[in-house]
Length: 322
View 1 (cartoon, rainbow, N blue to C red):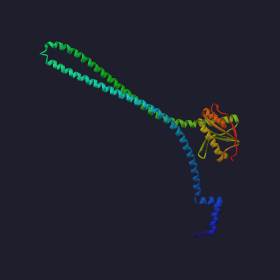
View 2: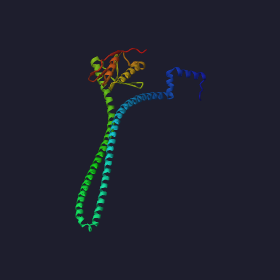
View 3: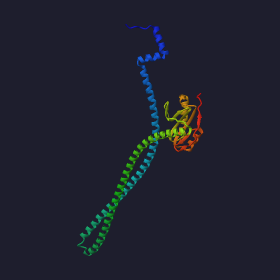
């Protein structure tokens, strides 16, 4: 038989659920809520990792867009040169049309000569005395015709040269298309190279910085990435009363130094348990311009590469957050 709880019993149960954690979890376990809460926690952790990956992808995409912009500028110059080649081809065609007009004029003149010869033949019976003179004139005309034919042959030779020039221009255009395809392949390879270079710099930074700390300070510190509230640190390690927080980058800029300082402030406020009484701020890089190095010195940030220090190492006293 089903029992109904009284109002006082229901109030006691609700109060126990509100004040007694173990009782609340026991009830949640019976109705399956604890499994749902654990899954929600795992989903939240995965979302944080996904946001971090999205940020890295956006940064890589910006670098790629810069490279694409440079390639497009080069492509625009190629198109300008191609436009000039097309203008040359147009001029060649216009000259060819003029040559055809000259040939047409020569043929018309030849027809007129034949008409004159016909007229001379019709008057041959009446003008035998003039025939000799006409024949001599006819021979001269044949010489002129021969000269015209030779000129015509030269025109045909020039036309052949024009066709060769057009063929060369087509070959140049084909080479340009192949170069464009090659640039597309190079762009894809560049994206892969950038990803590999970023990973290799981080791995190299952990090896070099860890070795320097052990060799010079006697501190054996394991360095790794650290993710805090969608923010990523390339270098983090703690041993004893010393903690190192830093970044690894191919080219150092002042903006990266600002980001490092901001991440350290964030850790002090949100995750102070990650800190130690002494702090080393570090940046490992392949190249650093003078302005960035000067800014790092003022902030007490240790900048180094595989061959040595670019700024001196400084150990900061960590003050408790207010």
